[in-house]
Image (cartoon, rainbow, N blue to C red; front, side, top):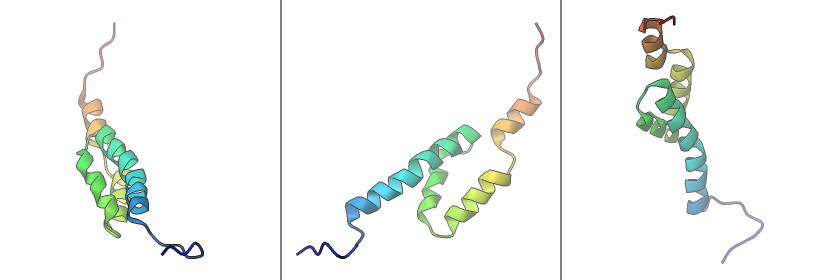
Length: 74
């Protein structure tokens, strides 16, 4: 029996919220040059904050490649 006055986490709602967090995090990790599976850390309570700070302050592999690439002038 479902009570409409109470708010509970239905498994479908939990999957939706998890997908809303993981999909953009996966894209950010991939575009930064890190493996996309790191976004799964967003499912863990403390690891999600650690990953967020790591992405914000670490030098991305993409930046390192861009800095070492020679500039060609036509």
